[in-house]
Length: 135
Picture (cartoon, rainbow, N blue to C red):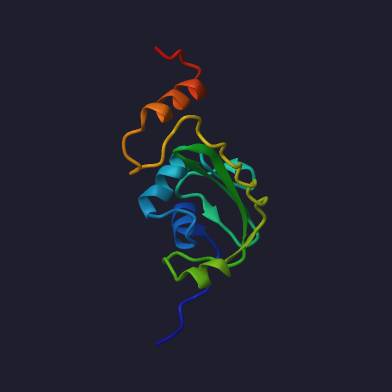
């Protein structure tokens, strides 16, 4: 059996999914259709070809915060999903490092779960912290 010929390009949605920038192929297709995938600065349709050396930017939305932009350069063309270590070798990551996680200040007047009902003294202290008038 002869080896498969080397590919010159791969579909954008298939490549984004194969290198694990999207969890599912349909999510990769939806990202392309939604304009969240760019190849060399241009919006990519799902069928846009990805070639070796192309710069692919994928915007990954997060439900509780700002979206992350992953900027990678294609080193290898994949159309089937592969293991994480093989997928990591298929591109060079040019993404900026993520910003440091901001330390959340402790919520004022919030008690730990399971500590039970506050005593009268604790209740007055909580009211004072929250800026409420005690009765």
